[in-house]
Picture (cartoon, rainbow, N blue to C red):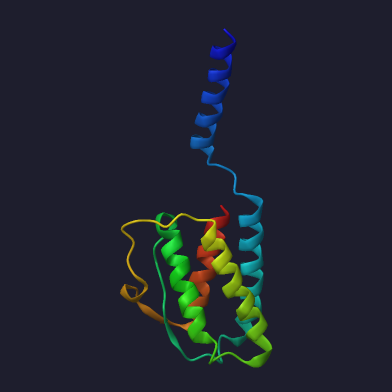
Length: 136
């Protein structure tokens, strides 16, 4: 009788998790919020950066590959960014890497170079939107 009750409770929790989505781990939420905040600091440099960057357009099923692409493209920004923004860029890169460590790699996702290149303001907006969507 006790085993049936325990099994029923576990089943109910599993169904609720499937229906409502599992809550995000605290570390992941912290990283996402830090990334979004640091990206806002880079926003003031949008008009000064004249680079076309690969901009992923895939969503949650390819989160790891998408983050990897954004991380790679952030590396190309280092030569274009002003000295005052370099710390924010370093934080973004560090937090993107930490976030990738929390997400399993997806399969069947396209490589970074298969994405369209967009100017920095569009790249910045897409990355911000992607991170915000990961908070939901």
